[in-house]
Length: 262
Length: 269
Image 1 (cartoon, one colour):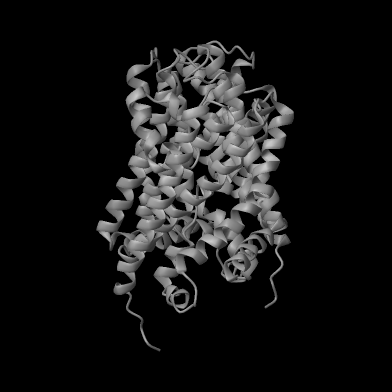
Image 2: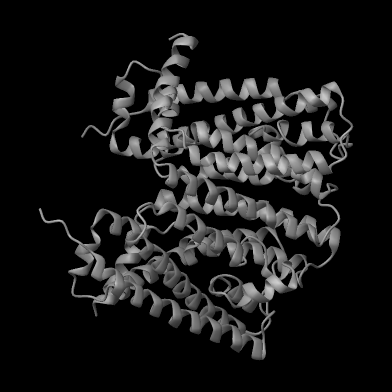
C-alpha cells in the first residue's frame, strides 16, 4: 500500500530535525505561558467569559499551543512552491492520486508533530497549572476522533489554498488571508464563545472552527450528547466538502498547466 | 569604516531594493493592504476580549492600546529594517555567509541592506492607527516631558526590538535549527508588551524587564504618560531609562554579533 509508506515517510521527514523540534517546543511553551497569563488576568477580573472559567481557559491555552503544529495552523506552502517552480509536474507523473499522496504525507507529519510538538508543551502546562481533564472516558475517544478530523479538515483547506498558486503569481497575499482565518476564525486566537453571539454562531459553522474549536469543545466537555454528535458530523461534512473542492479545483488547474520543454 | 560612509553605502544599497519593489506597484499595493487588514484584526481580538471586562491588569482599553501601539510600531519598524537577519541561518547552513565576509562592508550593514520590505509599512501604519486611537481616547495630561517621552520611547522600542532580532539570529551561529527560539523574544516580546506588566507572573516579568528590556520602552514610559501608579513598585527612574537601557542593549547585541561572526565556520563545500 503506497499511501502507508507515504505516511511513514511523512513522519520520518519531520523527525529528522531534532534541534528544530526542541526549539519549537520551547517557543510553543513560552507562548503558552504568555497567553495563559493574559486569559487568567481577564477571567480574574471579569469572572467566567463565554463559559470559560480559569481551569477551562488554561486548558484551552495549552491544547491550542499543542495543536499549532499538529493541525498545521501556520506555514504550509509546500504545494504552492512546487506549483510555482513547476516541480508539480513530477507529482502529476507519479502513479498515485496527487491529493491522496499529499494527505498521506500530511497524516505522517501530524502524527509525529502530535507526539513531538503537541504533547510536550501540554505536559509542561499540566505541571504548571491546574488543567481540566475530561470526566468521561468516551470524551477521550471523541476527542481523538475530533483531532484526526481536524487534521484532515486543515489539510483540505491548506491544499485548496495552495492550489491558488496556479492562478496568482504572488502567493503571499492569499497565504496571509488564509493564515488570518486559521488564526482568528478557528478559535485559536481566543475561544469563539468570546465573540459576540452573532459572530460566534457564524464562525462556528465555517470550516475553520472544525480545525481547532470543535476538538477543544469536546475535550472541555462543552459539547456533549447531541451537540457532540453535531460537532463531529460538521467536521465530517467539511472533510468531504474541502477534499471534494480540492479535487475539483485540481482537475481544472491540471488543464491549465503548461510544461516548458528542456 | 566611518559612520557617514556606512550611511551612504546603506542608502545606495537600500535605494536599489526600494526601487525594485516599486516596479510592481499592484503587487505592492495588494501586499500592503492585506498586511494592514491582517494586523488590524489582531487588535480586534483585544477589543473583543475587552467586551467582557472593564480593565485588564488595571489598564483600560485605551491604555492598553497605548502599549499596543508603542510596541507594535517598534517591532514593525525593526522587522522592516533588520528582520531579515532571521533568515541568516539559511546562509550559515549553506556556506553562503562566506560571501558576506569577503565584502569590505560591515556584516550587519550588509544584512540590513539586503532587504527593506516596503509591504511591512502596512503594519507600521496599523500600529500608528491604534496609537492615535489611544492618544485620543486615553486621559493624558500632556506636559513637555510627556510630549518628549512618547517619540523617544517609540524610537528606543524599534532599537530594542532590532537588537533582539540580531541576538536571536546570533543563536543560530552556535545551534543550527534554533531559529524558532528567537521568536519567543521578538514576537513573544511584542505580544507581552502589548499588555501591562501587571498581567504576568514574576518570572515572565523579570524576563521582559531585564533579560530583554522591552518593558523599558513600553510599560515604564507608559506609566508616566498615563500618570499611573506602578503597583509592582519598580523605581520611578525606570520610566525615563529607555535611552540608557536601549544604548546598553544595542551595544551588547553588536558585541555578541561580532563574537558570533568570528565563531562562524564555513561548510567547506
